[in-house]
View 1: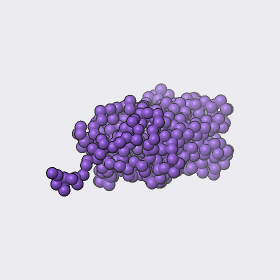
View 2: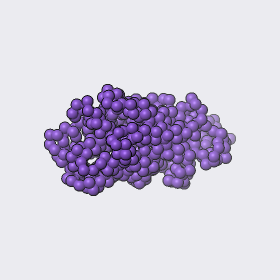
View 3: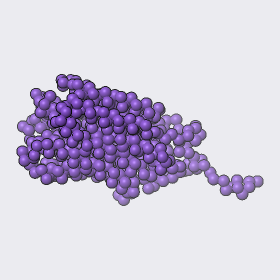
Length: 471
């Protein structure tokens, strides 16, 4: 005969899930990085809607609010400040090369340096993410810091086009990837309820860096010359990366076969790469992000050249346009991320991408020679693109198993790699074909981003078709 204590003993969450009747025969219950239950459907139709609000269930909360979690955000901020921030400033190098070392080459050829940089950064995500899932961030970030600083020093010594491709394109992009992915993935493992806010604060480092680096590089180039200007920027970036290396750690929950991650039974295939390709939500998200990436980075690379073509702009003011573009991203990475933790991350991601494309078609296309309208576009586009960039990672985490976080983030950015590398050169070819006018390039950027936003909205609908659901 059972005692009262035995009869009222709490049933473990994983046992409750074992006896829970499934809404459909194909529903798969998995622990997700939100500390909530993620539903993975292997059939084409299901009767169960899945949203952020619907899925607050059985998993224990992640350790957000502890000292290590705040240090991870702090370190990730500086990692992105010193790496992605400088990558955002490539427009400064594009304009400088066009007037100095590589003046004999056209804009589309020079743009391949920035495109290769972006492609290597994005494409490295799949491998870096998988290594992160197995070994954690420390050795990846240490190797990335060495490679990143080395690439900057080699850029300062370069004189020929192929040397810039190797140093500033290949090595620089790989170094940034080895710092970017482990830093953001580590932050995601600490936070559940306020994950988008935490990742938004960390991602804002890239915008702060994007504000500082164009102005700093321009001043250094004028005062100390290109070579020493690049070296000084490399030393600054190296110090910031060392701070990140000392503070970024990953939260690793206790793991056993019976009680692995979030209190749910061990599932052998939960962390495999192939499971990501069977998830329609992830596929729609990756396809939409890839199409957005085809046009998203074009303003970052060509807006300095565009400003330089306006005769009424005073000398050296054209570089401030890029700084304002990145300044808008500071607010865009933080404020919408905080809001998304309340109303839903997918609910903001698609509209933010649509706004990016709309701004290109409505404001940049008709900016003409108006400096005021160009500055308004730069600030607005920076805000909207910053929102997209800061939310794409927590959206991946929201639909992912904890054991897949690094791998899935890496896979997403690998999918982005090809569009990111071909977008700017295509824009440069359109610029050359139009005889130096920017109309065709701007139309290409705006329309591709808008098309991508429709796929992101489809991913949101696939998760939950209800209009007012918090997704």
